[in-house]
Image 1 (cartoon, rainbow, N blue to C red):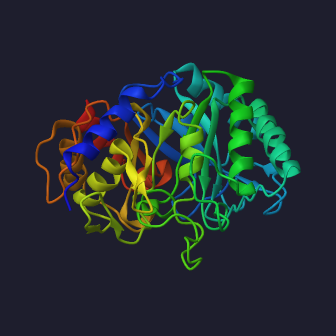
Image 2 (spheres, rainbow, N blue to C red):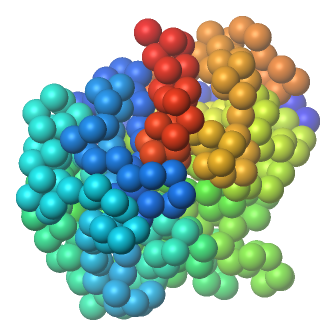
Length: 362
């Protein structure tokens, strides 16, 4: 299905009318990676001081809540029994300081596969803000990454307007992140790493739907992204661990292919009708706010993509050349870069991912 010209003009005008975003200082082409700071995950432990200079944003994985609904976050280094060679806390803090002195951004990532966070109450929201602030201040960090997975975010029945969400777990997260941004100012780094289920699937389904039969998590990140778009440093959707997702061409695309990355990225760079409603369009993000999320190696997660297919997708999105079956609705030379799970898995694989990034972006 090809979008008609009138809809294209609407998308273009929405992009032109978007206010400027407050951007933290990161390179025009940024490489983002998660560092297994609190666990090993089978790929070996890497000290923060030993992370190569290739990495522009280092996400410390993970801060997790004391309980699903407490909002209170905790973060600690990987136990020595699990991670032989783990540094002391003082060495860890010194390593962060050294990375930041080189211009790198170091942020704490909240959630992950096992860290379910549901801010169901105002008390949980406030605990989230205070505990996140304590972690940021203790370790001298640049900001926060929101990696809410599983059942952390969902939409209640009747909550159908992504511009004005009413579901507490969504509204409280938005409020918490706005509070953190206001506290730390324009240099605060705010990134998000949702799965496709919570973003691009919203093109077809949003929350439980009118019948109440759809998964209430469908598209549940959209109101958070939209509310924070003027403060958002980067959105890097996880283009992995995903089922087939329908693109703006009306076709389903499968992870691990160039077309999948092109289609998924085009959706957030072009904007899309939510739940198929042409009168309810999620506006495009700016290209400099978007990076593509990929596994660093086959062992890192489902949906690993060959370097040649990654390059093909980047060429298609950035230059408009070498596209496959999916044709994006424009070229995006300011596309920010790539995110990967993870720095550890890239090291495990001989740094193939970061080498390919440098080969492409120079």
